[in-house]
Structure formats: C-alpha cells, structure tokens
Image (cartoon, rainbow, N blue to C red; front, side, top):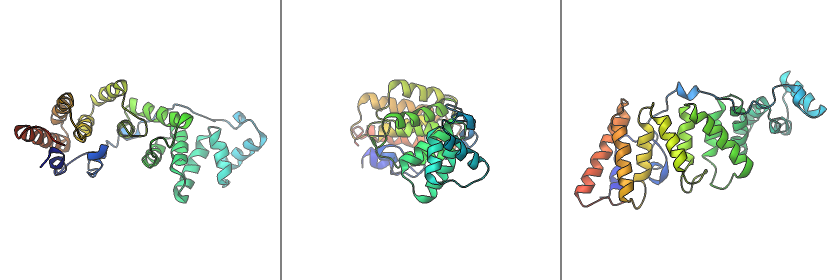
Amino acid sequence: MTLRSLILMVPVVVFTTGALAQSVPLTMPVDPETAKISVVTDEGITSTAQLPTTALRDLRRAMNEGAVLEDDDLRALADRGDSVAAWKLVKRLRVDGGAPADVAHYAATAAAAGRVYALNDMIQAMHRLEPGQVTGARLNHLIAVLYAHAWVGNSVALDAVISFNGEGRLFGALSDATRARILEQAETMDGRVELRFALDLLAKDDLSEAEKARATSYLAKAQASKNLAVMTTAQNLIALMNADTAQGGIQN
C-alpha cells in the first residue's frame, strides 16, 4: 500500500486542500475568537455626499431609510464602495443563486469596510471559482481583503490564503514570501498550519527528498501542538512516513 493510500486512512485529518486533502473531510474548526478579527482596508462610501450623482444619493438615502432597493440599484451603490449596499446585495445573491464571482466581489467590499461577517460568504464563493475565472482588479480586490485579514490574525482568512495559493489554484503558485508570512503568523497558533503544509506536500505524486524533509519538519512542529487532534494527526503521519521509508521509500 502506498503512503498516499495510507494517509487517507488516518482517522483525523484537518483540512481540505490539495489533491489528497480534498478527499478528507474537514474535522477541525478554526478558532472562533480569531475568526472575529477584522481590519478596514477600504472604508468605501461613508457619507451620502461622497456619491457623484443625485440619483445615487437618493438611492442611498432611501436605502438608509429602510426602502427595499432593486438589485441593480444595490449594485450601483456597491460599485461605488457602499459596504451596506454590498452586504445587502450579497444576501440577495445568496438566496437567488448569484454568480460566485459577484458574491465574492461584493462580500469582499463589505469585509474591506470592517464587516468581518462577510468573510465567510466571500471565501465560500471563492471556493466555487475556477482558476482564471476572476482576474485583474477583481482578483486583486479579493487578495487585498483576504491577506489583510490573515496578516492581522484572522484564522478563517489565513486558512483561505493557504487554500487559494498553489499550482492550479485561484491565486496561483505559492511564493516564498507568502509562505514565510503564513508560517510567521502560525508561530502563535496550534500547529494546524504546519500540518496543512505537510498534507499538501504529501499529496504530491512525486515527492523529492527536499520536500520529504520539509514535510517532516512541518510535522515535527505540529506534533508539539497542545491541540490533541493536530498532535495526534501529526504523530500518525510521521509513523506512516517512517514505516513507508523502512519499506523502501515514499511512493505516491
């Protein structure tokens, strides 16, 4: 039996990233307290007077007074950076089955203004996007909002940064600088990030010696976690790697 097959038998695995991990159910929730951490990256429209036309100003006043606006009117305000309109539109799109690219974009606009509760909708919609489906300014908008939240310690955003970076993923190949920043954030966490990086490496079809060493290093850190599930999973993976090596080397 190959290492890849054996890993799929490990009883507790954390994340759904990469070819291997996508086959394993999510069993370890993020820290609920750090998931609430927010940051303002673009406060957008904060005053009706900032809008350039009478029509837009009238729409915003009506919305703020409780009027139910049409989708196109909410979109017009959201496109000008009104985070209230953006969030209302996200909720509307969620019910109506809106395009994931639109849900992600407008949820990002809401989250950029400090509405951290919009992150989940943004990330869930991003998981429904194919690589290359969102490009240019819209992709940069998603990256800016997600990274800003990750770097201030939001665990949901950090998980998403890891999920969307890599070959064949939404953000493309993971850069050394981004990996280093992720690991820097992980120093105060419970080892789940290192475990996730190890899983991504072990999911590869052809592991180099350097990659094996990196996976082992990640697992050693995860094994020292005070989180029982992280520690146990890391220990199981280390045991599987050691057993496989003793039988002639890792074969994916």
